[in-house]
Image (cartoon, rainbow, N blue to C red; front, side, top):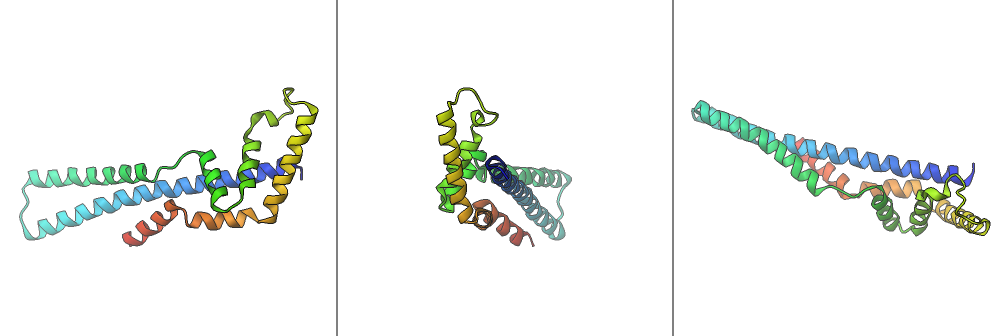
Length: 169
């Protein structure tokens, strides 16, 4: 396995975790919207049970039901939004205490390293190869996949997802 395939494998893993986190963020927004709509629906049903509601008031409550769900989903989405992939892997490398991960991903992200661009001299290519190799060795000693998985369990998006799932049950 060459150094680029190991780097690509790690980048693929990080991108997969990033997409996984974004899915949970979207699901949290949906659950928050459904939860807000459910509260309004329960309130509406309780009011209807004990009071006669005019058609106008029922219509208003139905509109409020939809609007509250949409508003809650958008508000949660706005509050839990996180930056792009670069900020993601940089924050993860900081969380797990592995700056070599950030350095390696920054090097891998550079398009000029791929494909043997003519802008690098032979000496620069040798130094870059050594830097990549050194970062990979440091990363492999710390089992990054396990550390990344465990740090993502404590990510604010995942904590919020667990809380909103528990509250909707």
